[in-house]
Length: 375
Image (tube, rainbow, N blue to C red; front, side):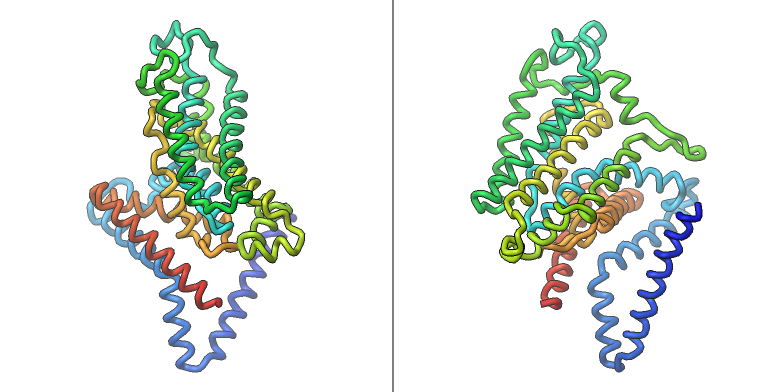
């Protein structure tokens, strides 16, 4: 207990010192520089300021409507947390690739393919579910399915990374090609066995329980996949911040030529980052298949767009070498909050796409402005 108190005391001390240093720096500025400081502050944090205003407005809106659960009530926050949890896996994977100045358009399709595979191997026996995809195959052990889909995701990710690193192809082109290939594989897979193109459903109760089973916090049920997301965040944070691979990732993202001269294996680093992303997509497919319950060829479509948007909002820069796991988590939170807030306000789903597009555009513009100022 004393170690925990010491840890938080140390963090608090560093935070206070940082604030004090910033205040003293600001105080030393002349009037003109202070105005410029405030201008830069509002421009660089425009996205977060807009989000804060929106949250306050929706909370006031829900109170004035006399709703039993307001936007910031505990149950609403848990609902947001659920949406954040199943979005985090893709964002964590895409985030590492963006740090390398790349992107991954195949993330959603890898997610979709692993959803189909997970669902097809974990259906109830043919005696209980007439539309079982592989009627003569026994239901697989869950741990084997998890390992299989994570391996498939890792192999596809490694393939993407190999093409990028070895042939010097842009990640946009490589992952766009992979996206189309995987979609074709998904369509073929949907027609395989006894399925005939129909949605893959009839999942075992054990599978659904492992993913959607709940732990009660007070009167609110929190599904297991929320805790899986927290574990994934901890693992990725450790890899990014405490391993050689993570340090090499930032070095390659900032300047691959300099990293190579410094002895960093650039090819290996790129492949490992893409492989880690694929593994995360694969595990996400296992989670999503049970969460959704009925899986088809559209599963995972465009999921990578939300992941990319969350990373950009969270400060992962397309200029390379910049980004934090905490920023990705914050970005996913903010993106989900904006979606739910718009739903609370009765905004149509069509208009929500426009809002998302504008958010991405503004976030990238702010990021580029920061980059140019640093230069």
